[in-house]
Length: 83
Image: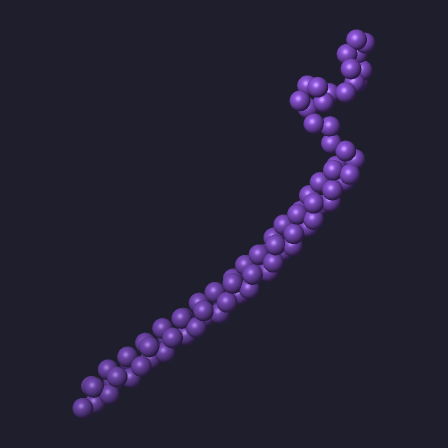
């Protein structure tokens, strides 16, 4: 925007005027950073899914172990009664 009687060059006001190369470089850096963030998010989602699957397996094994422990306890009590 241009105003009569005022210079178009804003460098005298302490406002840096980025060159086109700086703008392009910054845009490329931002795009690269965004891609890295998206990739990291996808990796985290995959890890969370795997962790949930492993937790489900652990829960099944704990339940199975509890069932086996009850069975062993019952057998032990039956054997003790027979003596």
